[in-house]
Length: 226
Image (cartoon, rainbow, N blue to C red):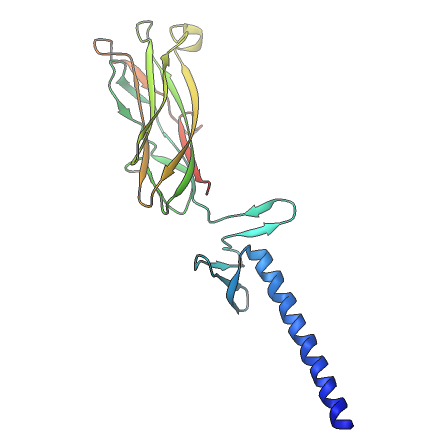
């Protein structure tokens, strides 16, 4: 009888331990946002291997994904960037010249995928990106009616502006004209994207400037959506 009671007590103890481990595992998976066949623990991190993708999610300061009851999914390693032109470029268009915007300074670049030497963002993985640019033209005259802005991706050129420089001849505004444009683009791994712009047409004066400076007047930003 004593042996039977001992066996029952051991069985209960084992079941309680298994339940404790299962609860701990479920909590870790909830925080990681995935399913796993392996969990390894260290002094300051827990790693979860996702069965579907093979990605390792580290639950520490360099987390890939963390679920927050208030903020939702927090993804500190998600590729994202904000670059800007550090100085004004004078007389770069106005005669229809297509000008590649020289975004040579960064506010942030999560993942290190933006190149301030080539002014291009390179997609680290295939996915859908949200992209935005703000361009300020300066120095236009009344003859400069047309302007163009392009998101040039490896898959296609996305034309977002083909209009007129309204009121830029008004000296009160120092011939300035700013616009913001946003697109969602599909990109493959190692695809690039950059911004082209142009003002005027052939025969017009090449006197249109693109404003720049530390205030990030003319800028380019983006982030991986999914």
